[in-house]
Image 1 (tube, rainbow, N blue to C red):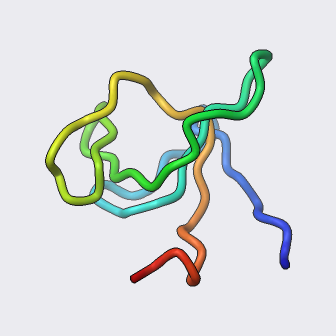
Image 2: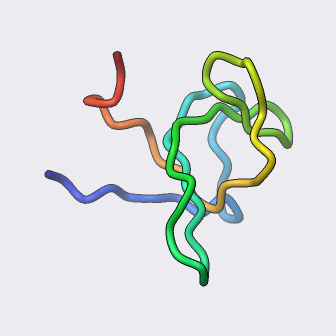
Length: 68
């Protein structure tokens, strides 16, 4: 399995409305790994049903095996 290359959100954000794999990775560890879509300053579930109450710290292109 190839190593995933993560981009820090403080360095570069993904394109608007692009679905990406996100995570929080800070002093408390890695958590909240899930697929989200950014719209403005908010991060939404891919189906647009709800936004999350946190900001991811990192993102990467969604791996091909994670797509339906």
